[in-house]
Amino acid sequence: MARKNLLGGLIADSASGGDDAEKPARAPRYSKGAIGAVSQSIADLKNRAILEIDPFQISEGGLRDRVEHDEDAHAQLMQSIREHGQQVPILVRPDPETEGRYRIVYGRRRVLALRDLGQPVKAMVRDLDDREAILAQGQENSARRDLSFVEKANFARQMRDAGYDRKVICDALSTDKTLISRLLQVADTLPVELIEHIGAAPGIGRDRWLALAALWGAQDLDTQDGIAMLAVQANARSDARFEGLFGWLEKRGGAKPVPSPAPRPVPQKRALTRADGKTLGQVIRRGDTLRIELSRKAAGGFDDWLAENIEEIHRDWLAKRDEQGR
Image 1 (tube, one colour):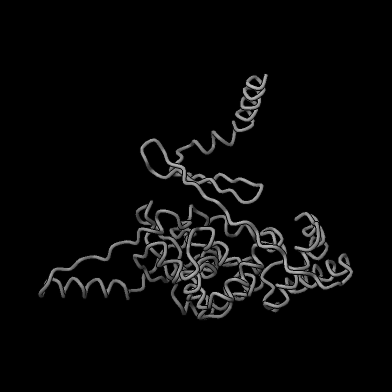
Image 2 (cartoon, helix red, strand yellow; image 1 turned 90 degrees about the vertical axis):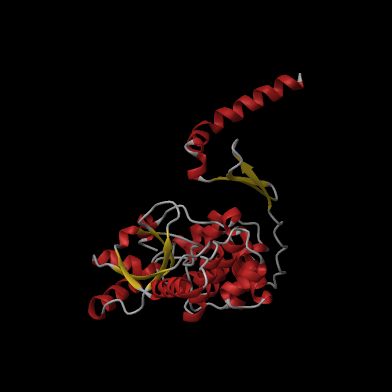
């Protein structure tokens, strides 16, 4: 957790489902005969080719699948690459917004390590749409089996909130709908900030996370209460932070059996469009909260203006409401 800002240089506007996720890129059409066969062969060779790319030309993409940055694991990966080189290429796709740049599909930790080592990144380049990229990212993680339960839960939550249906989430994580329901139960009950302060907790499985979610949901606690408790163990391993929070919640609740928390209300989403009909963002209502999300590229500065003026807008609205009420 000590090097959270490591990811800062990689962050760029990532695809979040929505309209683009529903418009898969068309596969190239090849004419029949010898020319078509040659074109297909060239395309196949390009898909199998491994390129060396400057790590600073690669931006974040897709969904965040890691809860925390593990400093020890990062150092070990750097040492392995320093001694043996990069043995496994990463997967990227062309950045649709900036020519000559790429977005990560999978291989984020290798990019960070190679960036710190000052070495180019060996990468396969594929033309993938948002849905195909998410599936490739999830299936590669499942094949390596190194995502913890809560990292899978966080990944499933991001996919659902981005508008992907249960089948796509199941395919990406190579699991069934029952486990997806358990993952989302944990992700919806525990605040994201709390999960991030706990960390990946690789030694903690499904049943313990479900029990923690039940304990948390049964008690009237603010997120900051849990974060303050975890701050005492900030230097401990994530498994130990989990156990510390679990024990603290048990003591507060008297270690009594805790009922499963009520499901969170399903978010209601409404798209926001510009005057020219293009997507500007979306409004999301969930329970007693409302969130406005704007695409920085589509907003063209309106997002910054809104952030600076929203309090004044609210004061004007209150004044007009009071005048109309007289």
